Image 1 (cartoon, rainbow, N blue to C red):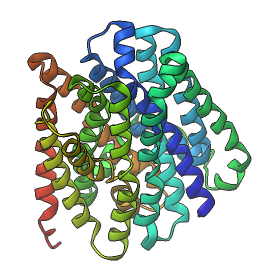
Image 2 (cartoon, rainbow, N blue to C red):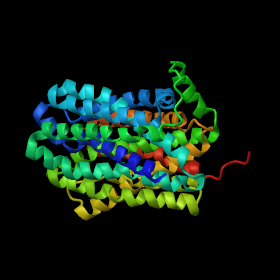
Image 3 (tube, one colour):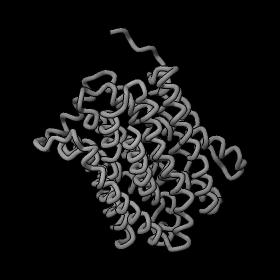
Length: 389
């Protein structure tokens, strides 16, 4: 269990760094390519759409080739997607969103499939939360190193360095493939009906359906926060390095936050209650983010962003462990992909809606306020005691 957890932690750390890089160095990219800042939302919208397709269709590939192999495939696709941005300008980002987005999206279902098989059920919320701290860890490294690398070696150089790191780590995983892919089924074939089967599997079960709607709201806020927070702060007058530092600092709270929520969900509270609290907390903090102005003290901005990070960036382990627990035997990967596909719908719509509101109003705060609405609804629903069967 320990070896699988460490490997999946590192795999998702590299994926997280790769996915956050465009947002962290967005001001430099926008200035160099002379594009509208609203296009950042379009990029992440395309990325989310391709991630949606990847997560809906990855189940058969995980079963056929094994979670370990598909983790390697995810890293290779992300590496090529990131590298494309350095060579093909605006069209490189389109390729990155398509190739890197669809590849990186497979990383979470693969890790859930593997850990769901080797982790004792009672410890699942804690183990999954520890594994999912890789995402804020990646954001932390990306925020600290991204701007520094971009200013030292240009933003293209920074993207190529990260692409190379993802590729090298995928190769480093190879020696342990035979040990961890013992459950693969070479007879399993991909069918287009897998997309329908994946959605049906989560929609027909009430508990999985609730998790899907929660994932939609939570991932939408996370994607908007990740994509626009640094650019938002530079708009308020902060330098890129300062904005990146603030982003990385507040994201760091998500690392202990995820472990804390997993610990509470494993030993003290039901996962449903924990997720209700997280939903209400992120609704309040993302709405407050929308009211930032140049006159706000930096400490207050940091405090609000810290709460947002501790909620919107920290729900993954508790939700994914519940998904794996509720999944039929041997289907944690496909079912996780189904639940996460709803999250990708939120990640798709969130940046696009934000981008549209930004284009219409010119106000960076409106989109953050709108993001609070679905999270508030989910929090109210999950806070209600479940109806007796």
